[in-house]
Length: 145
Length: 145
Length: 145
Image (tube, rainbow over all chains, first blue to last red):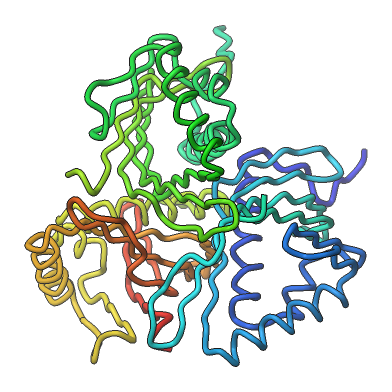
């Protein structure tokens, strides 16, 4: 009899896991933990965006890019919050496709919160030690379409 | 022994199903698939809103109204995103009541994303082939109350 | 054999319960039911915020504070909507830690909806009669950090 260490989740479990994974992932980025955020990608993970000339490939590159942006926001005294929502997940066995909307909300210290960008986020997620990692993320900013 | 093809969902399953249904429904509308969006209503479905003089009744009318709005947004180069959240569901056996907030976020091409409207969305949902359809939707725009 | 009246929820059930609890809690506040909203806190519940000089302690104080704000918004003709999202929950057995983002969206009658504030919301929740109560809430407004 085969023992499945991480059994296939029901759709309900899977959906909840991805919601919580996204929450924790963005809590890391928005609190300035750029390197820990990059660790939520696979080692060879890809972050592509229509706002960037070319994809960031691999954790080290993704971390460096996030660190640079994070430090710039900190220097400006701007708090970012990434909101992911309207999530749809599809289980393909060895990977999960997730499609969601993402808003970036920014608040300058002493100033007014506002939406900075509205985007579509398309992920390929893979299981890792009972949790999840992003293998491929593609972010499409609505203003650049 | 009776076979229940689509067993009554637990509250947790139900909640997840409605979340994913809403995500997919709005992905259809926001990507311009007005007719497929209308197919997420029952044939005799009702879409009522305090912003409209009278309810749209039936899929064909709902589709035509959505197609008109969709084409206007496309012509203006504006990307709409419907965000539904703060969802509360109540199972009544043969139907489900769902109450949520809905934001419409708009981004003009090359421009700034912003909230267009904040609303309350009250739905009656019914099961259909293992999924869901909207039988009755009532949208209340906060600025018109 | 011991009967556990309210069994420990799975993470998935717990996550759904907190989502629905938050939705209903904020529906109460945003529809002006300040006292019913305060009843979603424990009797000795604490509401602390970096926007307030000191925490509100106990249901009566929390209710009075919410009633005052609610009446002011009603007098101004402004509809508030509290959006909680990006939820992460952690089960500690006798209590649950929940961390989420919260946006306050405001719409003046006849006017434009806009984000009023972006915040981080950190809760300690406890089980109560099969549902949940807030024992401790700490809200950090991003503009005041």
